[in-house]
Length: 430
Ligand code: PLP
Image 1: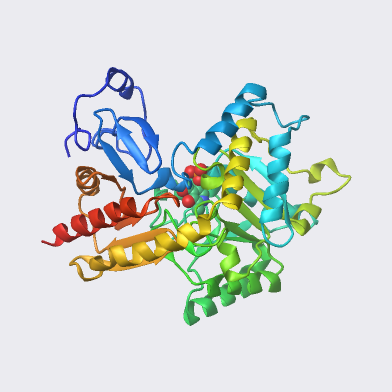
Image 2 (image 1 turned 90 degrees about the vertical axis):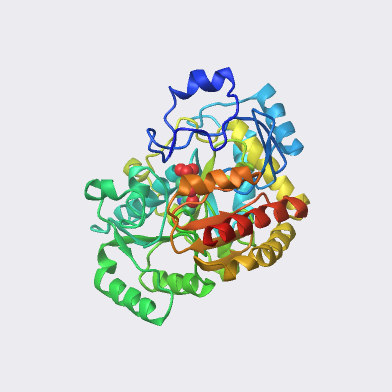
């Protein structure tokens, strides 16, 4: 693959001068295609430096649920910028963070009512893991240091989060021997796996601090879906062994799978829930780890050693919390879940022709997630470049081509995306 942008035109001066100093994500810097220079965004559009507009099929790693530059979010951030962009959350509090904590507690199911803020999904997962492990220490029960996680999972790139990702198929294999040894087993989907799971718990429950799962959809691990029944089984088992159950809703939260949170579809209340990505409507980094009353109570004590020792510098950032509050306004005032249902129908019909295309293993849709899984993608960079030529931004990984558009995407724009996928997948076969 030559070092060219997907379809290079004249590059702006800032691009030429700056790129040599940037280290890009998930990229072999020597051989990766160069990133596309973006000058602005709006709605579901990404505008490139040479004037081309791409219809966005990814919503910036699943964050921009209201589309780009939503005026309500922009106004909230601008207002906050003039008054209080940021103060530390240690010893100080402010209206946006406390309002957001109250609103998230009200939206989250059951007694998920204590919100710990951080600034990225991976860190929210670290905090959830620390909560689960320390809960046992605080209760005076030793030896429970391991999380139980599932093959196909992706929970982030920091050390703790990496240690509960899929150790084989995931992208952090290199670090395997250096990571804390948690248990990673098959998701209990289907009778045999469920029986294995229960047998595993029988043998190992005494050393397990908690169970962590991405509810309904394992995202970055391959866009794999499982049924709500799996989550109910996890809840029952967690209750039986008194284990805290962590739902990582960083991808699935805020309507992506069709309900506001994926756990609602299963009627299951986790003990700890992580949120990020669409929390600020794709504008600013923010994450939340939300604990149920019982989890919080294990930390409520006269002993300072029982405190949760975590406090990211930008925790509760006021700009980000203002954006998140504004994003919640939009979920309350605009029909996002109806839009997700409409997108699901359009993805079903729009991607249907892929079902019979050669080289396609599976086509699946859940909420506003459409996936075409191929048997094999030989040249990912070339495939990504083909999508740009079709006028869309779609970023296949592994063996999947997927669409996770803004929930506000217009029907004609969604049709452009699905048509591009059908065309590009179809021509691979031909
Ligand atoms: N958990 C899940 C389910 C994710 O999908 C991701 C990111 O893709 C993360 C955690 C990590 O989030 P971040 O990239 O903000 O650290």
